[in-house]
Image 1 (tube, rainbow, N blue to C red):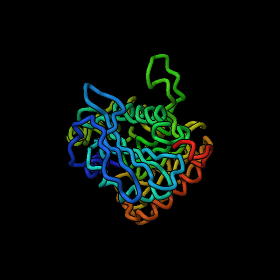
Image 2: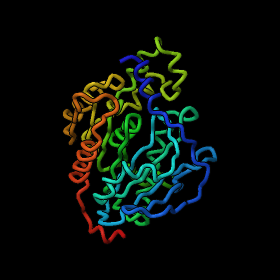
Image 3: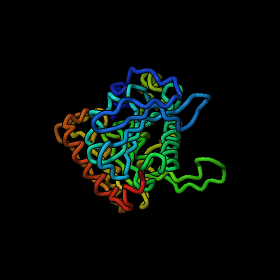
Amino acid sequence: MTMRLLTALLGSLLLASALADTETRTPYAESAIATIESNVVFGHKDGLAMTLDVYRPVESANGAALLFLVSGGWRSSWSPPERSLPFFAPFLEAGYAVFRVRHGSSPRYGIPDAYSDVTRAVRFVRSRADEFGVDPDRLAAMGNSAGGHLALLLGTRGDDGGAPDEGLARTPSRVAAVIALVPPTDLTIAVWESPESLPSYRQFPALDLPMERAAEFSPLEHVTPDDAPSLIIMGGADELVPVFHGERIASAFDRENVPHDLIIFPEAGHNLGDWQRVHDESIRWLNTHLAATTDPSSLQ
C-alpha cells in the first residue's frame, strides 16, 4: 500500500467539528435508552482539558463498559453526544455503558500523544469505576480506522499500573477486549514508503514518524500472549487499509495464542457498510469476553 493511499484514508475520516472548549460536566436530557454526561475531564495537556462523554444504559446495565475512541486520521473532534446515540444504541440496549473518548488532536499532537491520552482515559475510568457504576476489569476498547489502531495498541500494550509516581499511572491500563474496525496495524509501511509521498506526509503530520517510532506504535510489533481478546473487522475490497493489515495481526495472535477473530466483509471497502452486522459481531464479542464476574446491581 502506498503512503498516498494511507493518507487518503486518514483524510477521509477527518471531522469538521471544533474541539470542546469547556470543562463543565453537562447532564443532557435523558433519552429512552441512556443518560448522557458530556465533557467529563480525565486529564489536562498543555493547559487544555481532555474530555470524554459517558452514556449509561437506562435499563439492564450489565456492569461492563465500552470505550469508543474518537479518532479519524488521529484527529479527535467534539460533537454533541446525542449525535452518536444511533451508533451506540445497540450497545446500550445490550447493557453496556459507553465512554466516548477524545484524545489530543493532530496536527498539534501526534500518535504518541494520542496513545498516551487514550491510555490515561482507561486508567481514569478504572479509577472511577465505582462512580460510573462499572466493573474496572470489564472494559473494552473500540475504534474505527485510526481509532481501531489505538484500540489495538491498548489491547497489546496495556500494563498493570504500579508506576512509582503518584496519580493515575498506578492504575492498570489493560482492557479486557478490543474491537478494531479497518485498523492500520503496521505503521512502518507508511514510513518506508514516505519518500514518494512527502507532500502527503506534510498534510498528515501524525504520520511523520521515524522508523523506530513507527514500529513502537504499530500494534503488530507488540503482540504477546497476555494481550486482550481482539475482534478485527476488515473490508475485503478496502484499497485504503488493505485486508493484509488484519491478516498479519491475526497471524501474530495465532502465534501467541491470543483469542481473536478476523472477519472480512468480502465486498466492503473502507466504509464497511453493513453496520447491523458490525453491531451484531461486536456485541457477540463483548458478551463472550466481558462475561459478568460480579453482580451488576452491586456497582450501581
